[in-house]
Amino acid sequence: MINNKGITLIALVITIIVMLILAGVTIMMVVQGGLFGQATRASEENRGAQVHDRAEIWRAETTISGFLNEAYVSPEEIIEDLYNQGLLRHDELFGANGIIGSDDMYNGGYVHIGTRSIHFRISGSYVPAWLSIGDWVAYTPDSPTTSYEVLGSHATSNNGANVIHHREDGTDGRPAALQWRVFDILPNGQVRLISATPTGQLLTLHGANGYNNAVRLIDEISSIYGGTRGTAQGLKIEDIEKHMTDSARTNMHNNNWVGTQHTVEGTNSRAFPNIWREEQGSVINGESTGGTLGLSQQRDWVEGSAAPFTETSITVTDTSWEGTLQGNHFTELLHHQLIMRNPANSAMSQDYWLSSRSTLAGPSAALFRISAIRAINAFTIQVNHRTLMGSYGGLYGFGMGVRPVVTLNSSVRFVQSEGPNSATNPHTLL
Image (cartoon, rainbow, N blue to C red; front, side, top):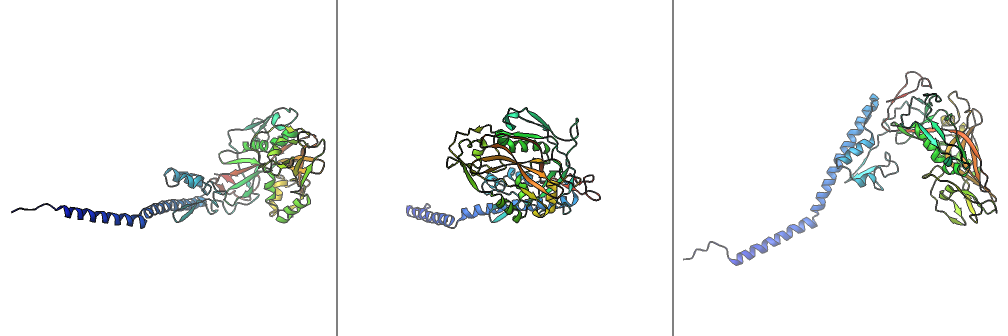
């Protein structure tokens, strides 16, 4: 009698077929049921939860530090830490919609992970409620660069001499240190300080090169007043316009025909500073240059000008506006006073440059100018402009101080002064 302890070929085939069917069903369940996608989404949700929890803990710790006037971890530091731990991806930081890639890192800089939208904004709690526009602040620049050399080839068109601008800090026989006041409290919580007076050292700008390089020169001179606590640049026309009332700003623009274009075709009146080619709205021989520079922007050093006969015509857009401004032209009276008054609350005795260019044109000539401020008296300020070059070839020069504006880092803390705040009793910084 034969003992069949194995399996028949038919049973083996049937077993294999059943196993294939079961495998197919399993694969279909994985693919059609989206198990892979579900696993990915679960991983993203977990990562989002970790980033969200870290952001909430950081925000709470920051609020407590604010009450205690202690330093805290800045938004930049917590974001960098999360990135180093692999919890934030590169595209979530620097992409078009990333935290740092957004226009406003603190108010618009959201990161989306899974179903969560996480922001790194501190709800204004780190700016103390008692801090106000116009308050005096004891700020000491600590930039390792304490002087700046203005090259005559950058600032003038007549081979002017190089001039060293030293940081005014009262050391080594230099002028007394600048004093500082709160100029802005930005929506993201950062605070901007403005020097109480212009620098005593004058920046001389002349001709085409003065126009070409004024913005960069003013900003780089101002930068020596920055350091580890913030960055500095010159006061700009936009800083003034944004604090004017809508009606005052509109009236100034309309009364000065801002935005009007004039085509200059005069035989001897078609010269222009070379940076004008790069400015928005510039037109040469009837064709747009494609310029992108705003009034207060400059990238590279630029020298020279186009000769009067180089081009057939130039079309210049009016950007200059001049007029006297009083307190009721501003949304807050204090901004009017900060721009035009000295620490004694009387009119500034010294005109000063704004870090902004402007142009003015008519049918026969165009003027290329740098914006400036002149205090008429203790109640009236004049936005003025100094013409450095005319399209007819005229070259002019002026010397004035600058007004540094410091944007403090978000991690800087304020300690309230004991007693009434004043120039001699300012708030201090941690």
